[in-house]
Length: 271
Length: 292
Image: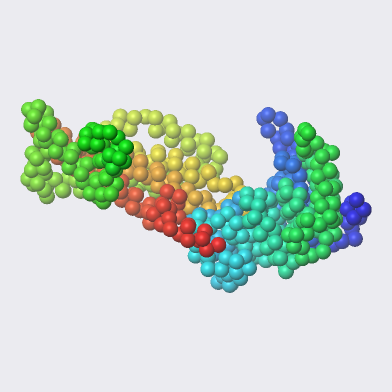
């Protein structure tokens, strides 16, 4: 695996977010759970970085720590050079569940952050319309979430996250609840939008193919405790088409990640 | 059904009892809904009338519905006045219960301290039978409107608080995370997310509370009053005027039903987005699914 280089010197790149020796322990009456142990990770400006790992490896916890939604118990998280103590500025988040508000129309859901902040709704209305058009949801402004399919709902959730034009986008398994075809469709759309906007993205997934397809780099995690075991640089030309998944280069990256999981005993195959 | 039997069975002319019985439910849903309700009510009244005549029941035990009906229209204004009195006692009590119930629920979910004090206190107070407290209210507030309203509100408030607390608490934690990431204040999270999210629970509570409020105002009237349907029942009881009691009970049933459907109607306007209300405009789903 010559092209899957392990990054050892990240200082050469411009780092936007950074985890340094991050540990997270959940204390509970039934015993402590060590979700993360000494995680070091740099996310470069404008980079699409994915984190793959088995269920329960702490990848969602890591995202919440980066987003300032969960305090760390060891180490430090920096976003934009500042240590994180609460949700940082210029942040957009998309979760696995779209968490749209049922009582608000599509456009009102996209505009919700304006009402939370001090902004003027009028200034953002045209931007919200543009975002909906970008996601092929033109004409659905006044529909309600329950009238939309799962894929459309998740598109609305992404549009909502992009409303304030955030620099940094955190995505926690955003397509995990969708069917395979819709997932492919949204992977292509997300790549297109990322290509146009070059946001810094941290993307959590448990799909190896999705991670390799979308990312500049893929961080592979193990569980109990959650640790990053390897970071792969994905050197595939962009824009990538779905067919790239059939190429030997793509296959080599996917295989490398699968091998790591095999060594970690993630798969319990018996042949 | 009978056609199929004809072609296969050897005895085509015999009509079994089962066929007759199944003919009713088969054609039942073809009727207009209001018409169906009317049929059920009318049948019940006819059955009541016939039973009283056939079994020769004394009027002071169970009067015939025609007697009750005639009595109701004997002095309709007088009956209407008492019904109106009970109606507005109930409504004021109910509105107070909703307002204070919602405020209490918000206080309870927003502070751990209040949850451990107020909530426990409320549960303890609720386990006291409210009817037992009613005479105390008369001592405190006299025999006018206020004790009835207070009892109605007191009986109705508990279910409002319980349902509202549940609704305010059951917001998806990821929704709260999202609001935090958008720097929403606690207040805005409460009014933009938690409160609307809790509305379906609030309405469920209100539907129970409206009926309880009616019970409360009748209890209040039983204890001490000179107006309202509870008062009419009490006076009629003293005179063994059973038809009069039946008139009041029928009016109470109508009043309770009207009140319930008023809340139901309000829900329809406030929560058009809720799951329980969607099937009424179900066409939209299919249309959009097809469009995409």
